[in-house]
Length: 222
Image (cartoon, rainbow, N blue to C red; front, side):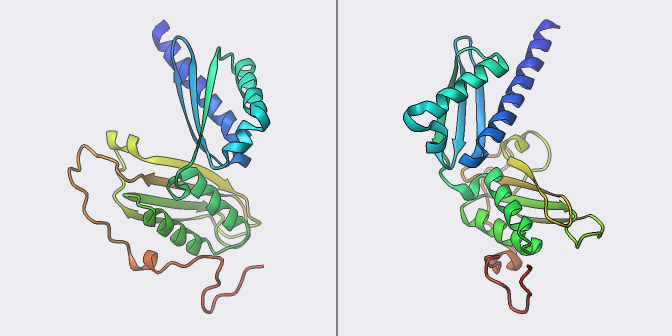
């Protein structure tokens, strides 16, 4: 029973560290983190869009971050490595944050979802799904859900472990809107798929335009 308890405690500790880093490194464009505990050190690999903000002048910021993790979570000898995100369009949390920012500024939710999905698939993703649920209608309206999907995206079983996902909440004037992004990165090998067929995107996705450019006949939201 002690082994099972230790396993659970380690999982909870990893979750809390990841949650802490997500908050602390939000301005640095936090994308994801991988935590590996060994008998000697705890390796924490973080991916961000702005590594310089995490490292700081002469490494001061990352030293402070290391000390905070040591004292706050009781992690002995943590080793933090910082890597720059290679393609922001393939990172679920960054794409979810992008959708959230646009929704909070009053952009049309459906257009935001279509264009964001197009960017992900154009970046080479094998499959992607973006879901927005909550107060999408005007203030006082009923909650609803919008979902766009393209490519191959497993929904059950072991292959779902290969799907990256992130959930971020937007807070426009109408009320909270949850944004869920799932992405299958290029090169992913599925045990039930020996050969991936060419991906054909729906016309509504291929024709999606940047939400910063007003669509014909559409009023700009103040």
